Amino acid sequence: MKHQELKQLLPEIFQRTDQPGSPLYGLLQAMEILSEPAETILRQLPVYFNPYTAPEIFLPFLASWVDLDRFFSSMPGSAAAQTELLQLLDSGRLRELIAAAIRLSKLRGTATGLQLFLETATGVRNFTIDENVLQENNDVMPFHIKITAPKTAQKYQALIERIIEQEKPVYVTHHLEFSPH
Image 1 (cartoon, rainbow, N blue to C red):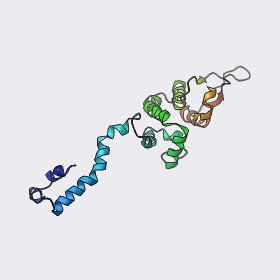
Image 2 (cartoon, rainbow, N blue to C red):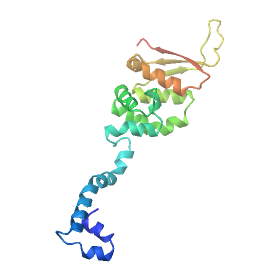
Image 3 (tube, rainbow, N blue to C red):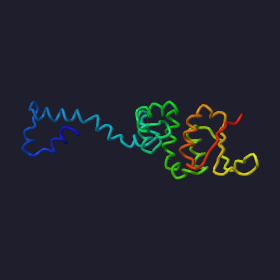
Image 4 (cartoon, one colour):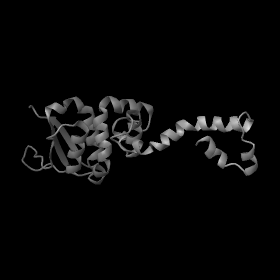
């Protein structure tokens, strides 16, 4: 707030004593200077809540709001989670995940949701999920899925495993393999 705005909040008797050189004048000047950094941030607040415009340092915090930090650390919300998160994903991938969080949440537990999550997190397309995995006797293996990832996604293997564990139904087992090409 500016000096004059602060002055208007005071009782009339104090407003009359606000003259240059008075202690009240100095106090209001100090209040104006001290509140400026917070007011600057508050004017820019919508920037912080948009995953595409938020400062990079704010992204792990934003990711924790939409429950994405659970994929990147054994201790979600910790400072270690933030560091680990930024090492696994570049800020562009993280921004995409945050933006897609609502849709991903609605599709949680489905093959479509798992595929979309994997593709959004890695930036690599063409993951396939086979829900009819055959056993050696050609019977369908109950409650088992096979995820085939493109070879280019192999550098994200730890992240992919973590996403699969968190996004598939708990009673479903899985097998992850990478395509040869």
